Image 1 (cartoon, rainbow, N blue to C red):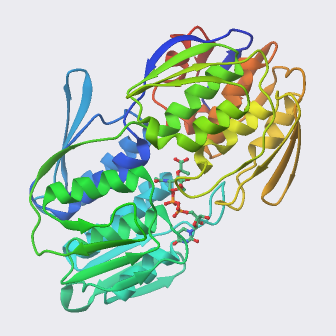
Image 2 (cartoon, rainbow, N blue to C red):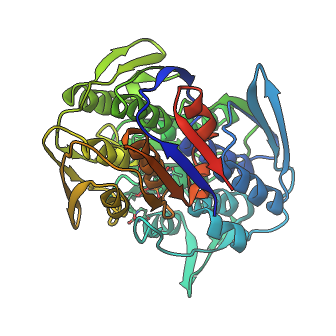
Length: 423
Ligand code: EPZ
């Protein structure tokens, strides 16, 4: 198990360039299955989830070439022919978001099969809204013993009116991709409004799909038999940006985050100001200055543009040293406070009950041996707590952190942190 050793106490200083967004690049990679033409994606982060998605695409018969343009990774994908409608089960276990291949396979081939491993660290993570959407588009969907199969009537999906009970990011993306190759018009009501959905839509439009209403309460997709090729950039990762911002705040340091879309982080920036951080927002950068000790403030995670669930654990770590009591409400996932038990080992005072965590700020945290458990955000949050704690924190399960953070230890060291990756 990979480990990170963190010696706390150093205020972070300097600037760091934020990478392309994990949760934007993964659906864009899946979308390449919709067309025979070449797709080029720019600013692709070198993270484990991207490597797994590349393996899955290769297993499907997609040709993959990785290159660089002015120091940024460039991914070329060409799905000239797809050799199977089955998403590789072993690889699926490594990354739940490979469910995003289901819609593109179903739309391209008229059928799709996958093993859906069910819940993980942060909750059951069902895909009922994805499958209900495909059924509304005329697919026959069967689920038995974790195996999911779907077949489109007469080999092609039809446009449909689809109402999402909840603005699911993955369901919105999967249905939008399938609708891009369906016959007729599909309307997705109550869609997710996350920036990553907009990035995917822009990519699909570049491929030739007709999509309107991104960011509104209904997305309209006019399907077409053929899509072409395109080149598209990946938006900056707002979650990586927020994670580094909290690294600056929790250590009382001063950081400049470059290659950021501040408009994607409004709720987060407001919360950081509320706890006393000095924040200066530029066109594509954010300057953060941490107070000696952060204040306390309640936070509730919400679908975008509310405070993001993927920055909840990081805030939990910050509130452990806040001046006062903070109540954190996790309204997106059923079980996203697992990191609380590990933070408690470091001296934090956190009481969790269902979707609530009550955090009483303490004067200091102490280094300890803690474990990241199948949630990359929880793992990153333990590193953040270690940056503040007195003494040394050893974070086990660092391989989970690699799923979504490129070279975290090296990049933190470039900001003055004392973090070492151990075997
Ligand atoms: C995406 O997951 C992100 N992952 C998650 O980031 C993020 O936390 C989440 O959106 C919310 O913003 C990727 O984009 C790869 P949802 P997704 O569908 O699509 C329930 C990270 O750390 N639900 O919006 O799976 C579901 O159980 C990851 O980078 C259903 O009930 O999120 C959850 O409680 C973690 N049925 C809620 O909706 C469904 O069919 C939100 O899920 C689908 C979802």
